[in-house]
Length: 569
Ligand SMILES: Nc1ncnc2c1ncn2[C@@H]1O[C@H](COP(=O)(O)OP(=O)(O)OP(=O)(O)O)[C@@H](O)[C@H]1O
View 1 (cartoon, helix red, strand yellow):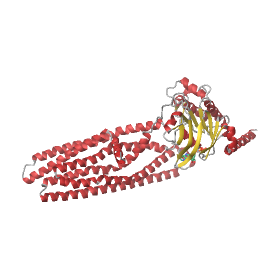
View 2 (tube, helix red, strand yellow; view 1 turned 180 degrees about the vertical axis):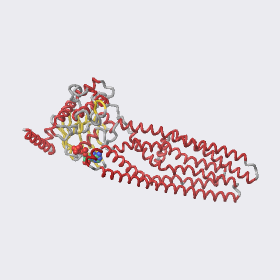
View 3 (cartoon, protein in one colour; view 1 turned 90 degrees about the horizontal axis):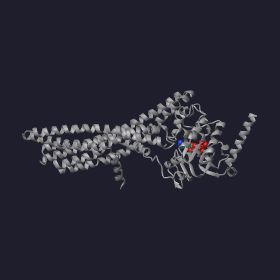
View 4 (cartoon, protein in one colour; view 1 turned 30 degrees about the horizontal axis):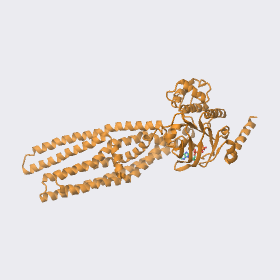
């Protein structure tokens, strides 16, 4: 299949049933309009010849009513299809976004825009653009056949050449406009993200007294969006003008010349020449429609690519692993790109049984590696049971606990059930015991029914982190990756969380990313990440001897501890 054929096949696959109905309606309506033109021509001839034009005019009037009725149906079909297309694609996107985090680097603004305006544009494109687009190709062919059969093949041929120039012309304009709408999208996405950020951090903005600055920044971005929209509209108008000029001036002039020549040679009657002019007008109509909605086509196609990338991302991975056989997770020459820069660049690592503690300087790439291992940002080089693993494969075997615990408004029970739908209260209590609540959650004010608010209000930071670990354990996945779970906790809570992870690691595999090197005591292996690579990995004592970073970090940690002791003493 050539790329052009593949593109056409892809286009046809995108047309919903209503779109094909629109095409059928357009063809039938064109045939009815052709009957109107030809019968009107006969009427003109009848009048000029002094015959009764009643019959041809009655035929023309009936065909006109039919064409009008079909035209009305053509107007309603896309509107009906738009609603169902929108519901269908929005459900797919939301399911994919909830089912598996696509990419931790994607901004909230982008995710929201995709589930709202991009779905809307894509639905509009499928429901209202593709049918008329196919109509724009099919209808002129029907008109040309009518002209060849009922008017003159000699006239149909030069018109066919003229019509054949339309698709390349429109395609040329479309490719020119692609970059323009890409910029619009980017500016629009940034504005959405900036609005969301400001709303979320309104308290901080007020405390800083920075309302004016934020307002000015948002106004500047809104102005950039407005002027980009105007630029796009201007370009759109140019396209309309050019297509109008080609069809209005060139085509009608050509037909006018052909009609006059035909009549003066006696090859055409005046009525047939009149019919030819009317038919030429309906030859223009689909291109007019296309011209009016071509921006819908451009924006919709681009939105469709992004909607599809999410909606059709396989939420599930391989799904073929034997239950009970723990996944072997390792990486060779692991690379992770973020923001256009390679932030993990050639890391080799093995995640064995027990506790693997990952340490390294700030900005070395530890969090990026943790996200990649969890299937939350794309990476190359990660293997599962010796085979290259996709993010979807990894999400089936790895659970992830981030630095800030994510608990949703609701009860502890509801939050836990997100990790193990259908788990009984006894199972929830067991998992809470494993996560450092020896009384299975009875130590919380209301047990499993304790309410937590947005973020984790209602329980302490350490408790929230241990509830998050319990929820991760409920997923039953083989590897638990925790990225600095103690960074925001006081020493006592941090110690409880680390103790919990050590306990969990006794029965499985835990990867703990941390700044506190003391948490590496008792680890089964310590991995040092520096400048995007694993520089040392092995038992703590060996790595401590070999890694300058780790030796220095332990020395700093010991002097911090003795200073603290000195103060306490
Ligand atoms: N979302 C992002 N987009 C672009 N670059 C990013 C993103 N997140 C992190 N980076 C860059 O990737 C590099 C590694 O960051 P990462 O957070 O993985 O390091 P880290 O070792 O975990 O650092 P820290 O210990 O300070 O948390 C940094 O240079 C950072 O600027």
